[in-house]
Each structure stands twice: as C-alpha cells, then as structure tokens.
Length: 384
Ligand code: KG4
Ligand code: ZN
Image 1 (spheres, rainbow, N blue to C red):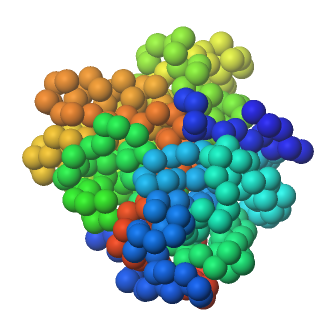
Image 2 (cartoon, rainbow, N blue to C red):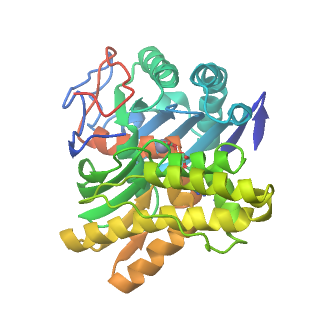
Image 3 (tube, rainbow, N blue to C red):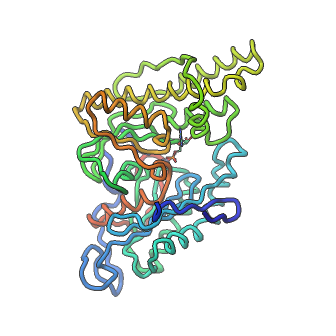
C-alpha cells in the first residue's frame, strides 16, 4: 500500500447509473479508429502491440481514483486511491473530490502501469468511465483519458459505470452464464438487470427513490457513524441481533423504495432517545443488525421475485453494497433454497474500481466500439 498525501493507493490485483429499458451498448457505436502509422485496433496480427489487447482503464466517477491494466480480458493491475477526507463532511463533497482526482490520477495510472509490468507502448486502447457519476469527478478521468489517448495515438473507449459493475463478474472465474440476473446495488443505484450478453442488458426494476447504499449511509448518519456508513453498519451488525422491526415497503413489480424505511428509522430513533438518552449508544449493534436485515430483506425478496418471474437461476450481485456480509449470506442461502447458481464478487470488485471499466472496455474493443475525442461525461443515466 502506497500513501500519497491525503489518499491511499492500493493495488488490488496481481496478488491476490441507468434508466429502465435496454442498456445501450455504446453511445458512439461501431466507430472505427485508425491511428496514424498503425494498424486498425482489433486486427491482432502484425506488430507486438497488436498481439494482445492491453487496455489502460480509468475510473473517477465518485470519490475513488482508480486505474487498471487489462490484458486479453485478464486483470494485470487494479490500483485505487480512496479519498478519505470526505469522512469529516459526512458525505462526498463534489468539488473536493474533483481536486483530489486531479492530484491522484497521474500517480495512480503510473502505479497501475508499473504493477502490471508493461510499457506504455504496449497499450491497445484507453478506457474511461463516462457516467453516471459526479460531473466534476468524471471530467478529470475523461480529460486524462483523452489526453493520454491523443498523445499515444490510441483509440478511446467510453464505459457506463453501472454496466461495468455487472461485468466485474468477468474479472475472475467462474463467470455467470447468460442469461443471468444481476442485483446491482451501489451508493447511487439499485437495479435488477437481465444480462443476455456482455454488452446486452435490460433493467427490470430499480429504486424509485434512494439507492440501497444511500439507505445504509443515511441510516448510519442517524446513528452517528462516519461516512460511508455501509461498511460500519456491516461491522457493528455482526455482534448484534435484528430485534427492532422496521417496515417493508409495498412497491409493485420489481422496483424498490427505501425512503419509507429511512423515515421509519428516523422516527423510531427520535422516540426511543426521548425516553432513553443513550439509546443509540447502548443498542448500536442491534440497531445496525436490524437496519441491515431490513435493507437486505427488501433486496432479496425482489431478487427472488425477479428470478421466479424470469425463470433465470444464474444470479449475481454487484456494486458497493454487494460487499455487505448480510447480503452476501442472504443471496447464498436463498440460492440454496431456490436452486440458483450464485455469483458473489470478491470485495475488490464490489466497490468502485478501474478493473471493471477495463473488462467492459475489453468486450467493447472486441466489437470495435470506440469513441471520439468529442465525447462528454454524463451525470445520470446514459448518453445516446
Ligand atoms: O459501488 P460503490 O463503491 O460506489 C457507487 O457507485 O456508488 O458503492 C458505494 C456504496 C456506499 O453507499 C457504501 O456505504 C456502500 O456502497 N457499501 C456498503 C458496504 N461497503 C460499501 N454497504 C453495506 N455494507 C458494506 N459492507
Ligand atoms: Zn459504483
């Protein structure tokens, strides 16, 4: 682990946000790219550069600056600089995040290249997260990727962050078999996605208000926990009992809602602390276990409904909240009951990382889906 300034860079390899409907494979499909003095990418014969598909991937959609090197669909390095200064503000401050990305991006890319043991001239393409995310943060990664591609005469690949969370499952074996369902749960999104091919996905259901990660973070804030509260709730829940019942929302279809749960927790804590001043401190573990149980129950019941409706038994989870131990256990045990084959990613592929951007870019590369220098990042949904 290498520390630079106020951030931590971790190499996570070597050792060890969308709308209902079909997810487009690319905002600028089938664009061909012919770098000067080189062969078209994708024609894998000829010079050494084109023997392998080697991609530099950059992720900067929120508060993690990450760079990865992917060769022929395998992760050679995956480095992440986490911005821990947001904790003092109780959430991500967009302007602070953008500035930290600017400070981190060059050391992180440099480390990813060194850890991968490659030289820059072996690269076949540069990939970046185009959206959804914080615009200022995305701009840093996008601008860096464009400048890098321009100076090394490489094609550019733009990647949708939520699609990449799903394809994080292809970073390691075993891969889910198509078609599979993916419950994608992060700080900004909660979706059930039917995945029919690497780049063909359909959102079957999504949250109507808060995302699951947001529910964890907001509940944690009410308990006086730091940001992001999801991992802290997870930690305290391990020594607690889920003995405080919170209501389950009645949302039709495969959609989710977490705003009612948030309000219920708020009123419950208000009433209890009126009677007993130290209620939160004295019951922290049980409160965390109860909140986690409530969120996981909402998620798992909808996932079961989707599996029964579609008849699909290949079931995956993805996104930051898929690091939650309660959700991981619940998916495994529901899988045993329902006859699913379940896919739970390793922790480093749950939260934001550039390896998932590179894996997605690899499949886009195989389809020659490149983009031009004119592409702009987008904060929500996807670009058309
Ligand atoms: O995917 P991610 O890293 O970033 C976004 O794309 O949003 O997800 C971040 C979210 C945060 O809300 C964080 O609290 C949550 O994932 N999270 C967890 C856990 N680890 C991260 N939530 C519950 N339990 C965890 N262990
Ligand atoms: Zn994410």
